[in-house]
Image (cartoon, rainbow, N blue to C red; front, side, top):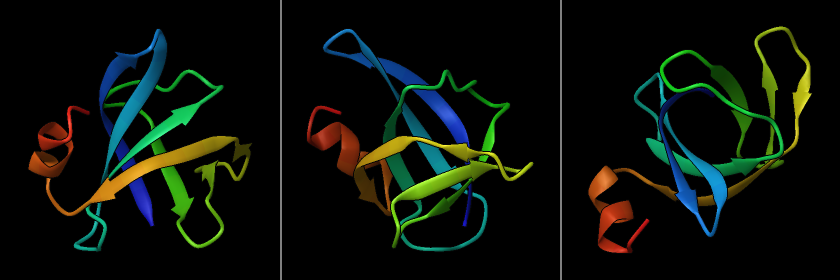
Length: 81
């Protein structure tokens, strides 16, 4: 599924990203960390939740770690993320 980066925040001095699924799909939102710098409102990534992998639209793989997933942003903020 394709996800768009919608927010960036720092957690223990490391950037983490909130991404929103572009289609009506569960989970609707994910929080990821990546060694790559991702841009809010610009980057769209193709995420395979089963394999925990992602790629750019060009097909280049991106190393990332999915930290949390939820169908609502409220779930992230309730858990202080």
